[in-house]
Amino acid sequence: NAGVTQTPKFRVLKTGQSMTLLCAQDMNHEYMYWYRQDPGMGLRLIHYSVGEGTTAKGEVPDGYNVSRLKKQNFLLGLESAAPSQTSVYFCASSYVGSHNEQFFGPGTRLTVL
Amino acid sequence: EDKVVQSPLSLVVHEGDTVTLNCSYEVTNFRSLLWYKQEKKAPTFLFMLTSSGIEKKSGRLSSILDKKELSSILNITATQTGDSAIYLCAVATGDMRFGAGTRLTVKP
Image (cartoon, rainbow over all chains, first blue to last red):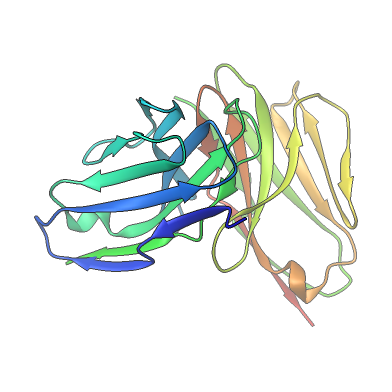
């Protein structure tokens, strides 16, 4: 089992460009999450999904969109990247219930110039 | 607004020392408190706590939740250099709130 995988591992964008980060999990988890991690700020939840076809906003959703068309995939989109979105992005998944242990992907380091 | 605060923010100890990391929270709709260890990349799960006063233990690590004081501690005994990492506390509500983490450095 690959667990949770993220694509790409690194990316550099110019301000105003768009991109999509892909998260995939092979554990048949219902719940999936996108976080960003900035120095000194821990992990902050961007959006999450409690099942295929459903998404919800987290703590810092502005500037991001998500889609969960298939149970195993959760996409995070940046429509018009800004330097403030420079961060490390982590995807996670869990069994039913947002209070349970989450399994994290290896992260994507995004730099917006 | 939901809040999770960890202390200290960083800690340097020598091998063999015992450390205590703290996590306090102010949230609505508490469901559980989780501890993760983050080395170079992805956080890895350590403990999940839902009931007050029941200690969870795994080797040299242990943790306990105090719902009256809205806090939890993570203890590491006989520290080793491999324990060097950032330790993250998270509280599950309707979603998940993480603290900023405690960076632990264990020197030989």
